[in-house]
Amino acid sequence: MCCSVSGKSPKDEHDSKRLFQKNLRSSDNIKQRNTRNHLREICQRHGRKSQELITECDFICKQISSIVNVVNVYPAWNENDTTKIVFVVTHTGTNVEDDIKSKFKDHEEIDVITKAIDCFDSYCKDYQGHLREDDVKRLEACIDKYVERLAKKHRFLTLIEGCASKMNDDNDNNEPRLGLYVPAKGYIPIDEDPFDESYDGIRVDVREAVYERFRKYAKDVHTHVKMGCQIERKRKTGTLGLFVQHPFYGLCGVTCAHVLLDDEEKKAYNNKKFLDPEDPENFVHQPSPPHDIGVIRKVIVKEDARYPIGVEIAVIQIKKRGPNSGQFPAPRQPQPHGNGLEFNSGKICGKPNENDECFKFGCITDYTTGIVIKSIANARIEHDEHGTSIMRGQIKIQSSCSKPFAKHGDSGGPVFVHDSNGEVACIGLINAGCTRRGEAFVTPINIILQELETPNLIPFHPKNASLLRELTILKRDHSVMKEKIDRLLSAVCSGRQDSTLKRKKRKKIDFCPLSALEGKTLR
Image (cartoon, rainbow, N blue to C red):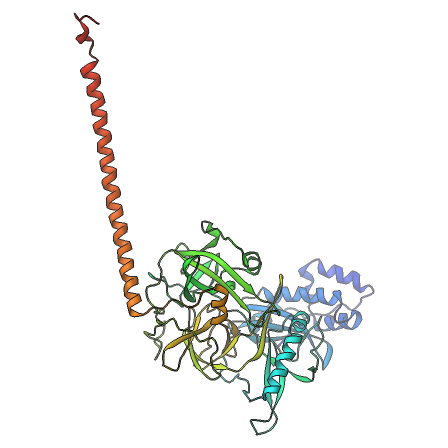
């Protein structure tokens, strides 16, 4: 998309640096600064990676970032025209292109490409071809070797994945490729160089997608918390995942760490031996304050290239409104198979098969269905002001319904398959994904339980559910009885105090009257 604007670039730039600094002082000079030709001139004169060009582009990026629904924006170049600057804008919602045009309507032209990241496209799927075992091993070794280097050099790279490229009509004759996913194919950030054409002899296949964490708001209050309902802490929200019986903290809920903590907190809380259960900062609410359900007791984060399977989870000690069944929240829209579905067995499936059908519950998209698809040695990358995080070895899911498998707010949601006996078995928790492609990444359940030092999930068999309900009733009756006893004790104590006061008064009257001493001899 091109935003057309009017006005002229400075004709006379005897001292470009002085003019450059002058233009920085006020946004009133945007007419001089936000021009296609002006950016090209700076690029030609000072270079694509120069601080002059970066600072000019930063100013424009801030103007675009202020528009509602813009998620990210960065200046980029294309190998076909190395001095033309294009702004890549990722966004949610609609009308962003019109808003950008309106923002720059009185000024000269800038080149903008917009990419909606929350628009599901059911046709946006990769070729799932077969690869020989030796090619799979080559891809795994290649990703293992280069993931950290690529993550550091390319800050908008969001996924590295081994994939197959079709060479002819024979499905068994496919070429291994290194899939590198970026927001806009062909547009390279101005301070970066292109990807190599190949790594260790494996050709690169640049693909267009943004994989990101899912996090947002929902508003249902549950008398007994359920898998799939919304939780919140300090304005950060997501989905409550699974329930475990922790060896130290008892009944606990598990979700993704990024649902409840920002990146700085994740590093501070990671594997911390003691998190104060009385500190309100650690309280977790469902769905929002003041409806607290418990407190964060443990955070485990392994987002590093060293770990073949990444994990980032938060453990919530449930103190109020504990679960009493394996039920999920009711979907906001009736589903043919999602109504009344339960997860009672506590069964897990650590390594689902390719093409296995699956489903999940999240607090935003509710019940959705998908298919486990092949993903060779994937590594999802995320950059922020605190550094780079790399999540490897996640399970990849492709939506099989008319909407994305997950969206913002669904992080932490549990994902399930049906085992060979037809029973529901958990494969993990939603961690991230790409809304446009309808794909999601799931942290495997076996690594989650391993990190928690817990052998299994809490089963909700009918007998267990009945016992939990009876226990809830007993607790309620105990509370009522305790309240009655406290009132009786209070009344008794009050009565005793009244009696004591009366006796003391009588003693003073009976034994201390002055008239009683008249005419008596004291011995």
